[in-house]
Figure 1 (spheres, rainbow, N blue to C red):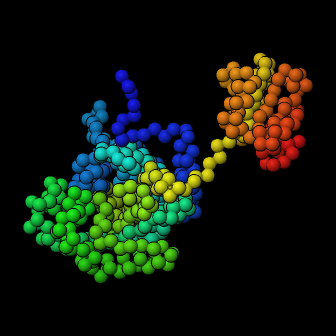
Figure 2 (cartoon, rainbow, N blue to C red; figure 1 turned 90 degrees about the vertical axis):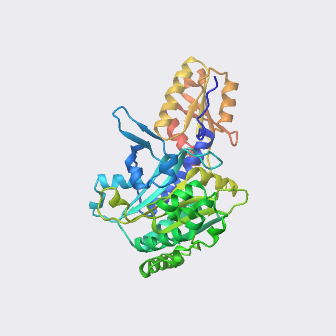
Figure 3 (tube, rainbow, N blue to C red; figure 1 turned 90 degrees about the horizontal axis):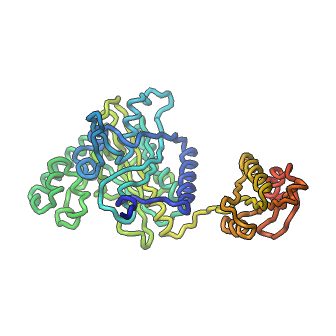
Length: 428
């Protein structure tokens, strides 16, 4: 029997893990600059959190969730998206009562969706997300979009495009919904089975259908922008004004609706225009979701956020040939010859590591030549050589692998010496 990772999942091996760590650290640094705090929610939630938070009519709830019953008969679901889970935590822990408002949060989390795997779309995916809860200001919408754009820009992406739309308030959406039903009803039986259901449950999502996007009725469908009331129009104008003030370019797409029921007012996606990136160009997407907190049992609390796929981010970096700056070199490798020297090497490596210096040694009982080869493979900056004669004199030889220069250092001073060498000093 051949065992392999389940379909739609992938192992992140050590050679790639450092790229992930670098990207995540850069994103965390940006979040710190924007004064966002990290939140971590459980890997699974009560199924109702997503049914109520994401919406029964969405593809996520209807087709894509990994749902199971535990031994107590409770229905639980592996987290398919981040907003509903964060919102549940916001309500449960009464973060709406915090003195500092709005509450600005970010997360790194694994999501699980049962969908057809393809390049950049996995069944287990890694996502960075942001949620701001407690402000209905258009400037917050612009800030959230700015944060997402900053992540891509700081990491070196240039072929990206911001697409925005307004879904309006409840009144605007109701009027648009009625217009969509009236428009698509004569063509109902020409649409796919999903869209026939959506037409009665959530007609806005018909516009987001991939199967029927070339249907003639799609091209003449009523635009949400034609049904925005004055308040919604003004809100959208202020969002655009804020984006312009920050120098962020955007394109307005009236057909951008997003795939979740909780969105209203601002909706946006960030796409890659990089050549060869692939058919699925969306890198991140989000929007405003006023009303979700109340749906989950909390007080009237406006919110806005986005989700960013990290797999897709790394794909975009590769497509644009952005080099991730990684230092794979080891600070030092201790070569020991003889049993007594081997024991001393254990001590030296321990001391170096405790002082924040990267250090390693041989664990394969290699000869000296084999140990030097191992040091080369690890790209060691320095090799520390310890034999029986050095041990008798309580010294250790430090060889620079860059210059070939070799220096004798007392064992008692090896830590301070290595600090000096690594900082560009003389070592002693």
